[in-house]
Length: 308
Length: 189
Image (cartoon, rainbow over all chains, first blue to last red):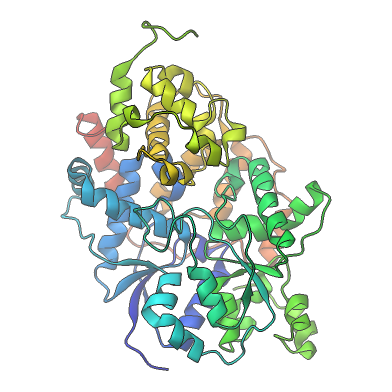
């Protein structure tokens, strides 16, 4: 498939480590769909939550620096991580409105700001730039019968005037994408609740409590799996799932996919190229049960190494 | 501590308002922020009370407690406020002012995690998760925290020993030092 879509790509720190499969599946999916991605050379950490928590000026400066670096590459800025996406959009919003802060950031960078890059989450690129029709047309293995709980978390849609990805309280962009590739979605209560995000390092007890409520709600709604667009949500829902099951003496067994992994499956990409082996809660029993993967492949897939 | 004229400090509140670019006076205490806050159960002062204390100039009560450090920055409060009080930004401002004052907060783990996170950015330009977690465990004295996750994550390729290096490191150091300079000269809060 050919199209003229080209982006500069800001992967963010997690995608170079704990969320390597998100990076891999994003690159593979975009290559398959003919969408150009050029990684921003020598990008910096956006500062994430810790920077704006205690030093907003630093957070704004780091984001402005990244936008300046992105400016050298043709196309809008594609961001995979919901936290990076939120920080970059917030910086654009604040620096566009507040002249005092803008001057301070100019001094910190010692350069005029280049903030015009259009920052887009992968969801927007798939649903709006590529478009749902073209996405649906590229599907060759529809995810028929798979019931997906779409989990937005906090930063993709909040606060109202900043990300402008979708409605802050009742978004549908994830559901539209995954339905376009043949899956079913479940209505559920915790799509927009917080998982505890970066408390995973400092106060894991908080994360266990909040994330348990999310897993519980997804299970109660009859979902087979959860889909996310954020490596922090993924870390809490997937990596901590076994621990949560133990604490609450329950069993969820809900694979947590990145949106690019599920869409990737539907266009026929292989489990290796989507990093499915890196998921802590194995998706392979579910995928074979739903006939989305050859049963004969099961043994070799289960022992698939993670991402390299 | 009792609420009185003596414990009232309006200058501090002005700083909070300047940093957060929002007005605490717009709040009429509907409580919607606290109703939707996922972290309110962990706080001694729920979000609406934080704003009320600010309105009364009683900021010491806030920064002596753990409420501001237990805010997850999920932005639910700012999204739902009928009066456009940007509470998530107020929380940022309070944490910053408390951080600068080496505030007498009861919550040390969150502060430690933030400090290490920022140090990593200054040194490496990016966040190296494994290093961050390891140093956090050592410095917080919780050597066994999440130890069982380690081998699993390593086997899955999720913990990286080596990272692609950022060749632009002098740039990041310049940004940090220019900000420090600005603060020293009183040109930024």
